[in-house]
Structures are given as C-alpha cells and as structure tokens.
Length: 478
Image 1 (spheres, rainbow, N blue to C red):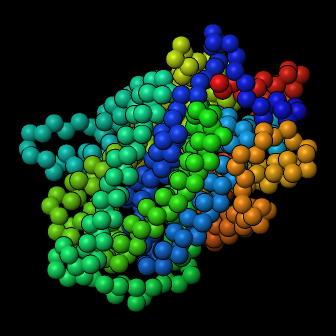
Image 2: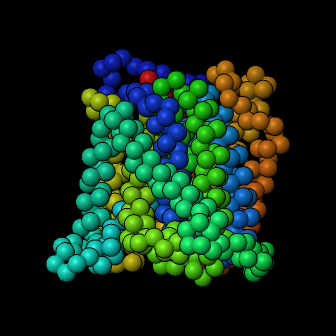
Image 3: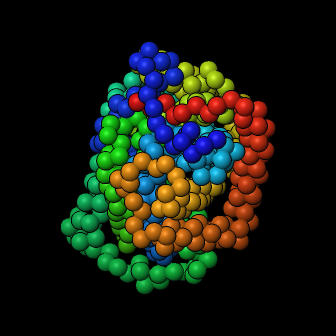
C-alpha cells in the first residue's frame, strides 16, 4: 500500500452509496470535542480521585491535562493534513501499514461499543435512583427498559443527516458546559463566603498530599481515563466544513477549555470539601451544592449526570460508527458497512455499533452487574494504546513530511516545538503505564487491554493478507 492510498481524501459522484459529506460546522466540532471529554468522569468520578490523592489530585489533573493538550496538538496536525473519518486509524495505517490501521480502528470501535452500552446502563441506573425518591405512585420502569429506551432514542438521532446530528449534539453538550460554568460561579461565591457568610478558605490544602506520591499516581490513573473522548475531534474532522481551519480552531479551543473546566472544578471541590465528603455517593458536585445550601442539589446533579452520560453516549455512537465505516472503506470490515443512506449517514455501521448496546441491556437484566463490568475491565485501558498510536504516527509522519518522503497536504497546523513536545507526550504515556503496572487492579486491566490488542492484531494480519491483491480504496469524505 502506498502512502497516498489512505492519506488522500476524495469524493465520488453524488449518487455514490458509500459517500459521507462535510456537513458539520466548526462550532459543532468544537462542542463535540468538549462534550466527548466532559462526562460522568468529571461529574461523578472526580470524587474518587480526590479520595485517592487528597488536594494533590490537582497535580494529577495538571499532568493529565498537559498530556491531553499534547495529544490534541498531535491530533490537530494529523487531522488538518488528512481530515478522514478513520482519523488515528488511518494515520497509523499510513505510518506503519495496514495491520496497524486495522488494529487501532477495531480496538477503538470495540472500546466505544462497550462504553456505549455502559453509558446507557449508567444513565438508566442514575435515573432509577432519582425516581425512587419521587412521590408514591410514580411509575418505576426497570433499569434495563430505560437503557433500551435511551439506546433507541439516540440511535434515531444518529440516523439524522450529519448537520442535524451536529446541531443536536451541540446543544446536548452545551447543557454540560453551562452546568460547569454555573458550578464554577457557585463554587467561587462559596469560597469567598458570599453564600453562607463564611469562607472555608484554603485550610484543606494544609495536608496537601496525605497519601504521598502513591496517592498522586492512583489519582493520575483515574484522571487519565476521564479525559478520554477528546479524540472524537479527529473523527468528526472528516465530516466538517473547511476541516484544515476548523480542526486547528477546535484543537486550540477544546484543549484549554477542558483543562480549565476540570482543574477549576476540582480546585473548588478540594478547597470546599474533605476527601471523604468529595467521594459521596451522589458525587462531589452535588455534595458541594449541598454545602452551599442550595435545595434539591442532589437531584439536580443526578439529572445533570444523566444528561452527561447520554451526551457522551450520543457522541460515542457517532465516533464508533464513523470508525467502522472507515474500516469498511479500507477493506478491514465487511463491505456492506461502508454503505450510506440518501442523507449520507452510514446507517449499517450505526446499527452494528448500537446492536451490542441493546444486547448488553438484555444481558444486564439477566446477569446484573456482571456483563459490563467484565467487558469494561478488558477495554478500560484502551485510551493509553490509542494515544500511544497517535504519538507514534505523528512523530513518524512529521519526520517523513519534513524529509519530503510523504505526500502530506500543505501544513496548515503544526505541532509546536517538534520533536521535543512529542517525545514529552511519549514519556508521560510511559510514566502512566508504569504507574498502572504497579497497582494490582489497574495492572490486570492493562494486561487485558494488551491481550485484546494482540488478538485484534493477529486477526488483522490474516485479513490484510487476503486483501493485498486488491487495490486499497481511498477514504471517501466529501
């Protein structure tokens, strides 16, 4: 396969049945990037990080935030040069060959298919908890039924033309961003003593790292997985108008806003709450609003968490279906998965993606708490493998372009301080991997992810060998 076979984008005739269109607007791309990274990991999971490290969790967030910015810069350079729906799978294929593209693409799809099912189940479980506190006589649908309804509704949304889908996800994600901004305002007023007349000050920081470096390391593992989702910008670039400029704008905007939202929110939480209070069952956001004396805070934040999960679910169906569509275009998946409807949506790929979610909802009803926990343990560390592939692809393809050996598009966005910052990202990923291997629970998760990656790669060797006699198709984005 030559580099041009996957590194160029093309458009077929208007009547093509495998064609996608660039219907997303730059503001939609930006909000999708924000929405993909802001989910239950912030609204609910941040409390676990505070409990693990105390106020020193801020160090974990700063380190993870720096890594996210570096990865986003790499994604920006690669996607501006090649705005394809295959994104980092296509980039890995261009850099290291078809087996690499196959492995990263399928690994990402498997991860998202499992996460979609987990998010539907999680949103349903939270909503069931809210309904239990409702007045007597309130209908109480089973959790599996709510999960099925959520899956059906968002499957329908993903069948819309990409422009309509983008607008829906824009406002869906906007709700989360608005809630975080409101929380930052309330938290600032609480710390200043405006809300209840007294300020907690910074006394919680007197014991900054109660569990030492081990706590910071444990917190880092929690935080890094919460940041997963930013990479959807690279996938959506393939369907965005003027992607070369839009991607650069989205990368710059999303990277710093995510860090501000996460670090700002966690700073307020650790300043106002003890680690034990931050790890309350209702989540740190609700716990802080209760301290601020706001009524029904727990119920409000529970509903916000439902919105956060559903928005992430919606974005993940989109990302997974586009990755599957790209795999089919590159002969790494059944050919019928590259077909698109009259509105240019890859509906077979969408249906394949959500099918697992529906099956998992049924299995969860039969075997509660067993199915998804097992699957999530396998794919829980996938983000490390995906980000490592992005870093490796960016380093190799950037060097090839600088030497004139790769037919890159003109550079509209470049990773700053190359190669130093690129290798810094690699170093941070190695550090996180080492820390993960030192903990028994995360070590098992990481080893399961590596095993799954190896199995996919082995199947990729067989699949790509069978298709080597057939010319590679080009990514089909118009």
